[in-house]
Image (cartoon, rainbow, N blue to C red; front, side):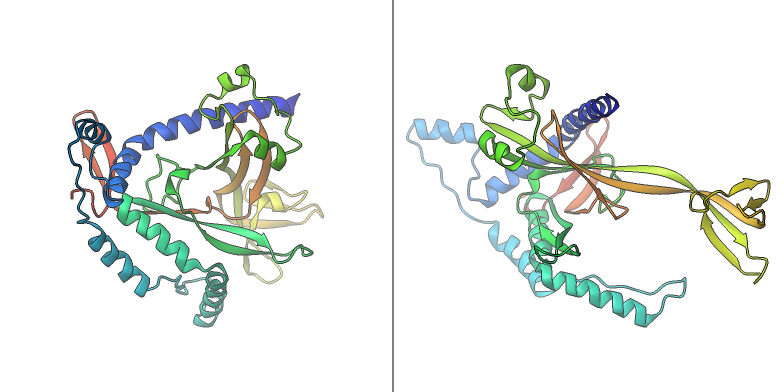
Length: 331
């Protein structure tokens, strides 16, 4: 019963978060839709186009934008992007930084990461936002080992990141959606153990944004939960050296005043203490009415990276809101 109640609470949160995030991104997405119509050679408003066609009037389109978009994107293709590491503190050395950089380059090479970077960059140029993601996959079908992959997201409108994030790369976001739509037949094939297989009117009414006639919206819902951990700086009496430890990792130990009492009756002097946030990243696969899968992610951030055009905060008279401009927006 507790699991069912927690699932219902989570599903309610997912549906409300989806509606909120969709509404917050709506204006930016509508502007992006106009950008893409112009770049695709359709500069006419749809209603105006239909009106002119009905009256046998011409609708001429002249491609004035592709040359500028191609110039910017081709420059990015020539000047390839790559992760660069700089050693800093805690015993870091140039050799260790180079070793880790080589590991990252190997991941980029195996992932064909330049395609992912360029796709996201081109989307940012054309419509003001683009994405790529980091994921893991098994080394082989008969292996338990996994390796990281950098993957492109071809359609940026399948992603919703936290609209309340403030960092340029949205790394401080606490939630995200990656959306897909599948037929009911395909849904039953991919999730044969799903409890909900018949999408009645009552279920459709519960999640109207998710279930549409013969197709179902399935989404990855990413969430970052943060729990506080007590970090202690203690002194080892035998060596006189200081050591950092988390209190919850010291089984059977407890704090008394400025001392850490250990299970064997000895104690360590506490030189400093603080509460540190411990992020926990979870991924839920859902159709809006049921949690289909649940996975933990070993990183601190949601593994989806956003690239944006020029970001502005503008007050049009009803409060300041975020605007993200593409390279062709004012054309």
